[in-house]
Amino acid sequence: MNDNGLRIGFFGLLGHGNLGNDGSLEAFLAYLAKSYPDAEIDFLCSGPEVVEKRYGLAATRMNWNRDEYNTASSLRSVALKGIGKVVDFFWTSSWVRRHDVVVVPGMGVLEGGLPLRWWGFPYSLLLLTAAGRLTGTKVALVSVGANTSGRRMTRRVFTLAARLAYYRSFRDQLSKDAMRATGLGIADDPVYPDLAFSLPIPAVRSATPPGAPTTVGVGVMTYRGTDDDRDRAEEVFDEYVAKMTRFVHWLVDHGHRVRLLTGDHEDELVSAAILADVRENRSDLDPSWVVEDPPKSLDDLMEQMAALDTVVATRFHNVVCALMLSKPTVSIGYAAKNDVLMADMGLAEFCQNIRSLDVDRLIAQYTALESRRDVVGPAMDERNAVNRSRLEDQYDVLSSKVFPAQAENLEGRS
Image (cartoon, rainbow, N blue to C red; front, side, top):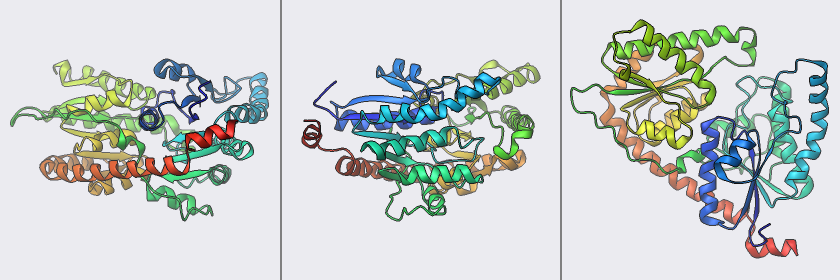
């Protein structure tokens, strides 16, 4: 153990294939590398093997039961899940107590919109913040997303978990208002931008000559609806894929190149289906006109986006990355957070809800956005500068209020 540095833990669905979650983590790691280079860092997360390999830091799986997120298919697996809920309290507490601070870096950790059971991740988050209170470890929820879950128990578990945290900040006013609606006293909790806005961005390379084909990034998602759609999840999925495929067909038929974009390894199912359809139904089309190359990180995703002219995306962090690069963007959101983000960047009219996606309207939005590319870009540049400045302010607050000074840290260990 490094006795000269802080002991900092990270918690969340990290190393699990979601580029947005991992990007938020990497933004926070960059802050620590600059401000606390001697900190001892490890993880309690859903993908420990991936995290250890990628960052060279120790990682522990989030749950005692290795099959926690697999569907129970036998009496034994059901029993193990039940036992695991009890063991996880001690599992989590043992890990938390070894740290000065545990950080939940961004992510939609208080969101209950997509299919989610209260005894899954919400319960794990509650164990984390409760363990922090019991052991005296500071648990910080930093620039997190939240919404109002329609399921009572999920809402209650999230509310209690948030109440027990030492520090909370939200990535937009919508998230703060959602938690306030649950009765949580959060009047003094700050709102800061998504952590990804503090990531370094690659040089923008898209300068398509007049008359040359533009390249459009089409970000897709393996979307199967919400908890209320569990009985028709495959139907919801098929409808979404069909609509996005139709839009890609329209793009290539009107002289646009397409790069399919993903934000989670599961999304490759959608991009592969669209690509296969194009190859079959546009067999005379040069293969280079529709391509996919699943990114391995948010940095990879931004490198791909840097060479694009316009982006149409579904996943929240696909939209975030496009906006960070000041790319004209259309959002097909599965939650209100997309609309809030787009409005903040001056693009409120270029949003649709994934549940009511209208391809004809999408084509009209895309066409209108293309005609205003020279106007929307500078406005996004200005807002991006504000977002980066606001996140620097938050890092200063964390340094003064959450992370103890080195002398204080050493005194506590003597």
